[in-house]
Image (cartoon, rainbow, N blue to C red; front, side):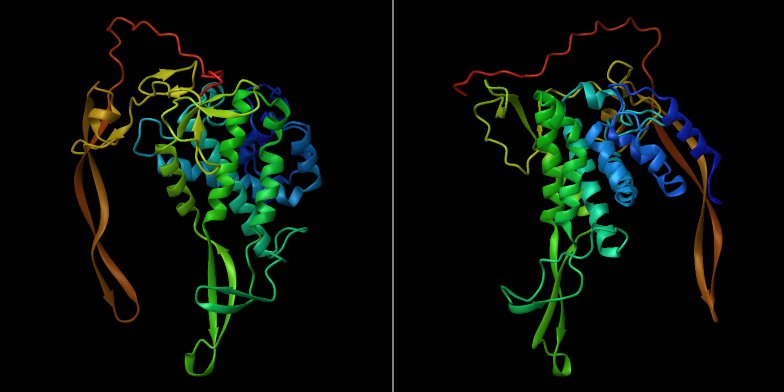
Length: 377
């Protein structure tokens, strides 16, 4: 308890008094100090958890710590992938919805990415914990034994293969629990994207080998399967986000179909969405958009991080700031490096907010999701 910070107590009190609202999600676990206080008290009090999630939490307290780590990994990767775009995967401190109501209310591309990257983060973190021996009921992949073969020839399974199957199975049971209970159109979308996230982690399993033999020859190979860095998963899902497919729900209400008959049917690895993305230019409490006012932009860039696009045509302010950095570093024998401090004056550009004197825009009614389509599609 020596490292227990008073801010952790604030979060715990929030858990105990926060109502179990529809806006709460399991993502809130990522903001809880499980390492500091344990999980027994939290399992029954986290807002947004359904019955099965609470039971899994109580039965697998050790896994829940890794699950919370995985949720944080997903948030961090999401924010890295979207740091230069109008929507930057921002989270709301001490809010049980974590990402704001926009992720729950609008079935957009961004929601598709958040669900997939969160699911993938949980798989990655739990699998890593298995290999490190941190979990009671999981260790290295027990199926990777004996002899096998790849394009380079035969090899012997050895070392510790990452047990991604256990990580994926637990992620599916816990993360999918709410959607499987509801089973409406949005739940089908979430389930599809959760599965795409799990498959993304499995896609980046790599066979790593060690050679044995005389004089460095590779007469015998010992191999194991290892996960790749989570950045590869994030890059892959960002590509899937860019090519996400808009879908509707079939006549029976139990499956997804493409909204545009000219588009190909999405695979289980693709991301899907129902609705066009909301306007992330201005702050909107109804959708949870924080807007881009005050965001830093690149004046010379023509991309999404450029001031023209990032600031939504409102213009930007320029401030000159002083930056101190180490320079002219030299190695001195023995053994230290000595640097000078150089001062640079830099221009920082930030987006202007909406003009307060401009007449308010008429707010258009948001189109409802394409939930039912012609059965002939």
